[in-house]
Image 1 (cartoon, rainbow, N blue to C red):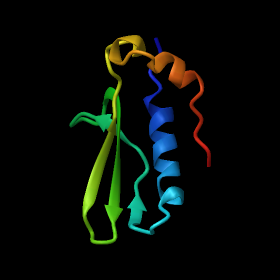
Image 2: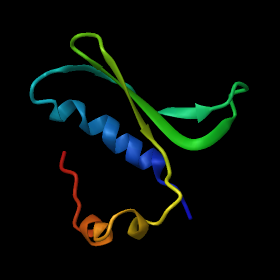
Image 3: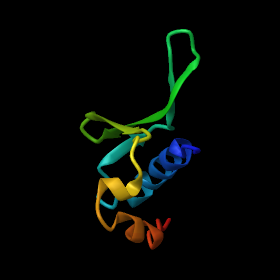
Image 4: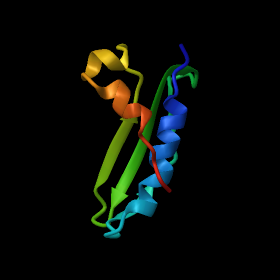
Amino acid sequence: MIAHCDYVAHLISTHIKPHDTKGLLIDVSRPKWNLDVDGALSGTDKTITVTDVNGKRYKITVEEVDAPVEELVDGVSEALKSLTIKA
């Protein structure tokens, strides 16, 4: 099964700043790849760094979970069918 970490990380990184209605975020990084010390891809995980107006940094990690959606929370599968993210 294909992991969509790239897509999920892209959506998060591009939609956080435009939805910062209070203007508390000064920077949202592009998703960073999970690379080993030699620069080879070591997983599908992606990391996004967010910086607020006080210079505090936050790390958002998007990683694949080894469980089908149905096993995570009852009813999530139906809820995800109607989920939309508006720009």
